[in-house]
Image (cartoon, rainbow, N blue to C red; front, side):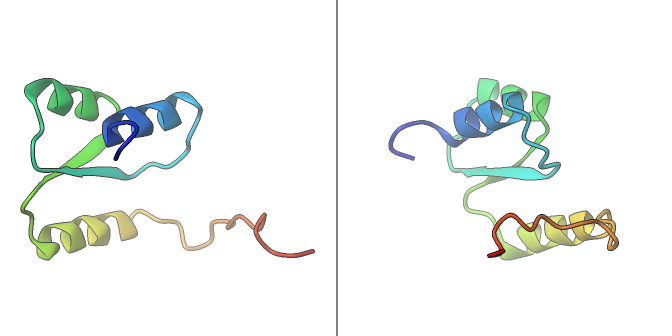
Amino acid sequence: MPVQQGIDFLEKQKRKGCKCKNMALMSGDFTESDIVRAKSIGLVLFRKPFSITEILDWIERIEKTIDPDRKLADWFFEK
């Protein structure tokens, strides 16, 4: 990202109250401090090059935790 690192963006979103429970970060050069920081805010890390299977496995695990009766946001529908 040209203006800020992805981890900075996601960390700010969490601080602002983002309710997203499952966030991932993909990079080819995580530093040890990036790894510690990402894990402290609950990010899943994918180190490049990664296989699509790794991501699909993560998505399938998340899918099992989603309540099918949850109310979806409707702010984007015209009223």
